[in-house]
Length: 309
Length: 291
Image (cartoon, rainbow over all chains, first blue to last red; front, side, top):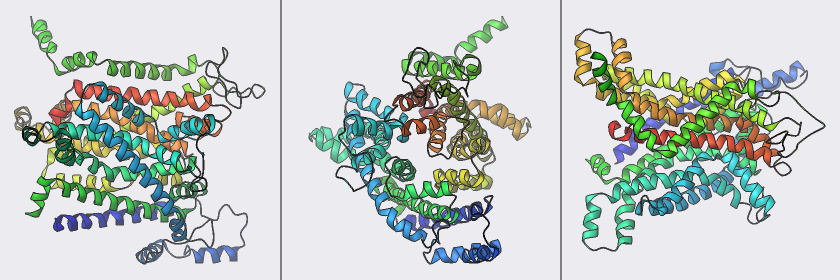
C-alpha cells in the first residue's frame, strides 16, 4: 500500500512541474505587456515597475526566480492590484470556495447516493425511472442555466431565498450549493445505480441473503462498499469539475471566492494573478485525483491484496 | 447469383443489427430525429431565418413572444428565434468540429500505440496518463485569455483536450484486434502498417468510437457554452447558445423568455445527444465488446 501511495506521489510531481512550466511560458507568451493599458507611462516608472515584477530579466532567469519563489510558498504579486499578493487573495477566497464545494459535494453524495441505491433496488420500475430521468435532466442542464433558473423561481417569483452573497443573510448559501451540487448529484446517482446493480448480482450477496440477513443489512453492509467504488473513483475528476463550476456559481451569486477571482483575473488580463491561481488550483486538482485514487484502491479488497503483496 | 449472396450477407451485418435494435429504442430515435432537425435548421438558417441576423428595432425593445416574433425580442428589438438559430449554427459547429479534431487525434494516437506496442506504446500511453492528470478546464480558460478569444483556437483547444479517452478506447480495441487471424494474415501479406491500421483496424473498432463520439459532442458543447457564459468563448457580433444564455441571465428579472428559450435549445440538444449515445451503446453492444 505504501509503495502504491509513494509511487503515485512520485507520478504527481512531474505533472505539477509540467503545469507550472507550461502555465508560466504560456502566460509570458501572451501578446501585450501588463502595463500596455496605462496611457503613456513615464519611462522611469515603467522601468521601475518592470524591475519590481522582474520583467527586465531574461526569460529563463524569470522562470528560475519564479520557481524559487514558489518553493518558498510565494505565488507572487498581482499586476492589477498593486500591493496585494496572490497569497492574500487565495487566503481570503479559498475558505469560501471550499465551503461552497463541500456543501455541493454533500448534496451530491446524499441525494445522488440515495436515489441511485433506490433505483438499483427496483430496476426498471418507477422507483428506477423517476430518479434516473431526473438525473438525465441534471446532466443536460448546465450549471450556468440551472443557477439563473433557480434564482428566477425561488429568489424572484416565490421570493423564498436570497439570490446573492455568501454568509451575509441567513439562507443565502442554499441556492449556490444546490446549483453547484445538482449536476454531481446526477452523476453520483447514475454511478451508484450502476455500481449497486453490479454488486447486488454477485455471489456473496446471494450468500448474505441466503444466510437470512435482513435486506437493509445486505444492501448497506455488504452491497454499499463495493457499489460505491465507481463513485469514489469519480470524486477526483468531480473535484476539478466542482472548481470549474465554482467559477460560474460564484459569478452568478456574487460570491467572493477563488472562482470569481480567477474569472476576474482572466477578464482583467492580470497575468501574475492568472499564473498564481492556475498553479495553485492545478496543484490542488492533481492532489485530489491522487487522493481519490488512493481511497479507491484502499476500498477495493482485490486491489488492496495485490498492493500489499 | 452473386448479388443474392451479397445481400444475404448484408442482412446479418453488425450495422443492420444495430439499426434494428436502435429502432426499438424510442428515446434514442427521438434524440436522432431532434438532432437531425436541429442540424438541418442550422444548415439552412440563412435562407429560412424570419429576420436578418443584425436587424435591430430599438423602438420595439424587448417584447414577449408574439405572432410577429414567435420567441419574443431582446432589448435591442432583435428577433430571439433568429438569434437562437444563428447561435445554434455556432454551438453545433463547435460541437462537431472540435469533436472531429478529438476523434482524429485520439484514433490515430490510440491506433498507433496499440498497433506498434512495446516501448512506443508504453511511452505514448504514459503521455496520455500525464495529460489526463492536467486540469484542462483551467487550461482552456488560460488559453482563451492568452491567445485571445478566437473561434479556431476554441475548436483546437477543446479538441486537444477531449482526445484522451478516445485514444484509450482505440488502443484497447486495436490490441484485441491485432491478435486476430485476419490482421495476422494482412501482416504476413506484407501490407504497410498504415494500410493495416486504416483498412482493417479502424473499421473494426468503429462501434465504440461512434458511441464515444456521440457522447463527446454534448460535453464539448457544454464546454463552449461554459466559456461563452463566462465571456471567454464566442464574442459578439457572433453569438452562440451559451452567450445568449449569459445575456438572458442578466435581464431575466424583466425578460425571462430571453433566458428560457436559449436554455431550452441547448438543453434539448444535449438531451438528444445523450439519448442517442446511450441508445447507440446498447444497439452496438459496446460495453460487452469493449471488455
